[in-house]
Length: 374
Image (cartoon, rainbow, N blue to C red):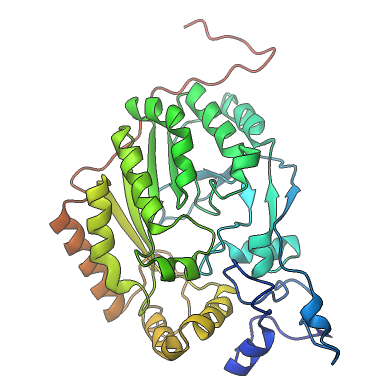
């Protein structure tokens, strides 16, 4: 069914129910619907023709498309994040985290931030070669390279495509500092590269732990590692001498906020020594996707949770103001921040911050390039 409508108009409970995709078709996925992206001229909804035809539609399967990237390094100048450059080997993420703030970027590809985001993925296999070329530029000045700040570089398709592995090999050869964020146990595969880098002060890893409740974690992040595997990964990395940060991210009011202390205690026992948190963010299409998720998994909490969310965003579903978007504002946000800080201090986090080195950087020499004599 095609209809023209303004994008991101207020959504009622009836609309959410009507736009949901059959549960069997989306088994193992995080989003409930697959609404058209905000740049599309028409919205599309599945409508049964009376013959049960919608029941015959195939399930959502992971499709991977090769994307030829023009550049490797993405730059940013946001004042409320700690890095100014990043690498993104994949678009979309099979982990299917319903709250993922990267979902709206799929609209740039003419796809849905809903189920398309977690089933129609893009890989950039030439990214390591592009990175090496950009690091070789005479004007390049090294600073920590962030990986995993958009979509997870260790999502399941990394096992086959190994783009993240290739990027680490380039960074290791050039002694370039790297900070990784992931919720996947696959990062342990690359300890052979990360361990010697960490010994030289060139690598650190942040593991996101949203909940210790397996059932809740499965509903929020259906194809990500279980809470137990994430804690085991923290332990494995820490034992290898790799600095590990635990991220309680996102803190979802009324859903996982009661777990802050338990998550920090478990992560510290596993070896993490730095900790951070991020308040739930609901930009653009994520607002409606998250409401749909609540309606399916916690219908009795929908009004309460959204009321708390709005209390952290000045009465709106989201406020992108720099300096506020990561932590929110208002009494609830303030209380959450103080609770996190007190728990982290009590448990022993953040006594020392890992600062990565940039003075060891050695620009790569490309074929036909001039060697450095000194």
